[in-house]
Amino acid sequence: MGNSDIRDKLWNDAKKVDFIIVDINHRSLEDRLSLILQEHLRNNRIDLSLIPLYNVDLTQSGKTLNFVIRKVDKLTCQYYIEGYKEDLWEPPVQGGEYHGNELGDFNALRPDFLYRDSEFITLIEGKLGADQTYPFKQNMAICAQYARYADWLISAKINKNIKIKNFIILTSRGFITKTTNKIPKEFREALDYNSRKSFVDGYFLIWEDIFAAYRHDN
Image 1 (cartoon, rainbow, N blue to C red):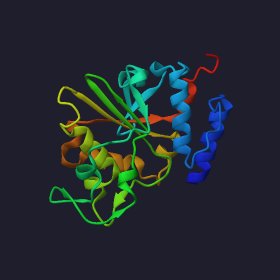
Image 2: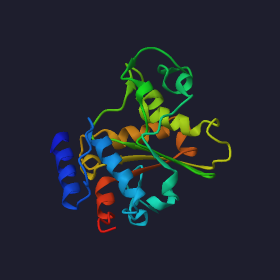
Image 3: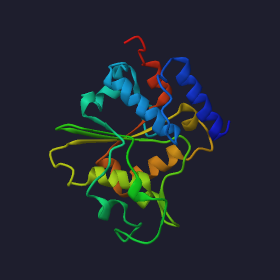
Image 4: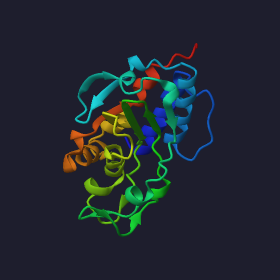
């Protein structure tokens, strides 16, 4: 099954459970689903305690989404990382610095969701088959999209009091079970590099599990 087939199936699965309350006009399926999810969360139609989180190796973590998102009103969709342009999206890393030419617009990147309270910060990035935004001919584990989000989470600039930092990839079960898909491998490599996983907890979140936790009668 190709990427477009997986995306089409995901959209149809969402429709079957009445998750699609309105077909938001947006260029990408990731953004359309995220904006619809935001609306359902605001209206208490999603039971976060029923949505499992998977470890980076795709095993069950024993945790559910309410562990990393404790108050829905603190969740921001399409979060704009302001004030970090110089040290986050400026060119690739080499010898500890970002420099060179980019393939893709790093400055336009926005996590699909960001949650923050006094103790937790959780970044959720949607991936439905698209490649990471990455620096041209550079080691992706060092400085591609996942790496830079992880580095931003680790950064002390966020808030020194925040002890638990979570990085979640939101995708379809069809992509993480597809043998040729790069998402799990690249996510693991980004968190393994430079011991990022010692500071950031990585998880996978599956759209189909979100659909199963949707309560359309609320």
